[in-house]
Image (tube, rainbow, N blue to C red):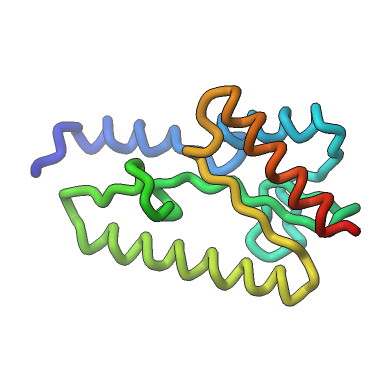
Length: 142
């Protein structure tokens, strides 16, 4: 399948993809804050720079995009039809890096939680997922 966008249009579209302060991440932060959690953002001292860090609970939360981090069983985690081998290799590197970073954090004694983009869709879903994460965080703190 041929790309319907010009290289300039494709570049413009790709430049809008952000790694920080994404809509799902901001929504989860607001929901966790409403539940009384206080946290740090993008701690560069920890492996993988977790999106949300709760030092009090020694917990790190990653907010993963389903497409980029290959959420299994998610309809968003499709493989593009053009330049397929490039994308397969890219996704494999992403998944491998995610596993390595989670292992490193766990070896340092951190609890690692992952919130997927599809789990944080509408407001009701964000609140429900935040409650689940809160229970996991508090459970490990005892």
